[in-house]
Image 1 (cartoon, rainbow, N blue to C red):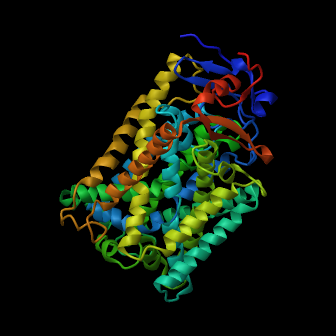
Image 2: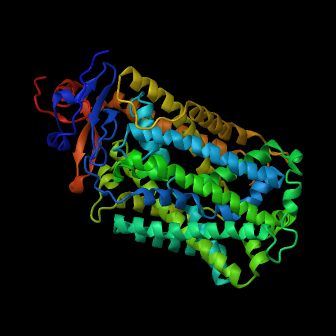
Image 3: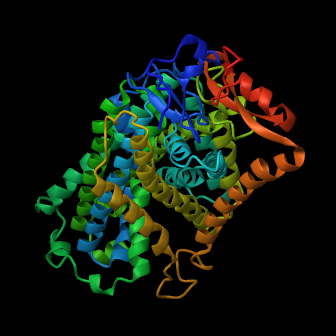
Length: 570
């Protein structure tokens, strides 16, 4: 197969939306560009319909190795490790099996992390992680995956559950009574403060996230070390090894639903290992940095999670953990340090941890939303893409704030709230499966085109394990609970959130079909992309409607990437 290979850095003319005719790699059915950003010496070879490379990142280059670690760590360590161990224990049936689940969860997360790393090595100058990787893995139908994933990302870009949990612990810290509307009000205020910390400056917002991440890290280290001290018999806790003498007692009574629910809770606690891939174009030498710092953040978190669980099991009996009205961490602090001052100190640390999680999620998802906007498949391209006036992704921050406030205020407490939480998790497993299988497609396509080998290549075993693990997380939740169809986490049908999650993704697919296929057919036009230049260095694609009778002229004047040709006679 013959094509013209373009191996130089992007020229100033191309940066301004003009094109040298040989800058497109034409394979006949697909067209590729080979362009580079200032953050990497490696070129990004991508299909031309993808969002254009931003040669100079308008968000700067403030993300170093420590920021990568803390972006991931802060998103993973929210409130899950303090509250979910009792749910995991209940689903696993035994102390030994619950610890095994935390280990399995780490392996599942690490296998998918390796998929992200290889994708990042293919596209070192593109931020947005899944936005980019799905866009380039599934190239046809044209704009299908960008549209579906962009719509799904916008619809689920709320962090209401994290904000409400933060509000709950703020009331505990203040030792004040709350009502549903007081809780909602504090949640809205807390999220508003988090957004205000980020909208005015990228560099200082990252520094703040790093500082809070460091406090969270120290907190978990203290918890883990304290647990080992308790286990060694150096505190007032009686018989600290009782849960470990017959650690797997109760495992035989585990149901498929219970085991799956436990693993879902574990994976919820690990969500965030991919967060730093949302800011790849803000990292100098990204693959060199990410290939050690991203796995390091996951290994550190997994180790501390397991040590925290050992601490909980050393300070309380199995029944106390399962039946207590307080979270496992509170039970540990009360049994080891007493009830008053220690409990308040724990609540303060959990509040800080939850707030740091809000910041990390905001930073990562704002880049995802911005990259969705740069693809051109969302309306109001400038709103998503512009970094004015503060050199921050203001549009995505505002959208996340608006949707989060709506999802805090609209659903009632209880079942509806739990349903929204489950609904926001399930699509992640679907897209992770698509990413893992898409990596195999990308490898095959790039090898066929003789593109350069990546700096990082995931083990085939890890990719296969990621595919199987994510497939399990998609299929297994359909297995009903032993107590009946209404015996899950909610009082209605246990699989409602699964159906709705798939329904939302299907609805996004229908939107694509109507927007890209049906309306142009009746309207007598086709979509073509053009390059949009904004102040501050931001670059995006914008889809424009070209009448069918003018398509030939348009294609002569523009290349496949939407840039104006220098020589329109070619």
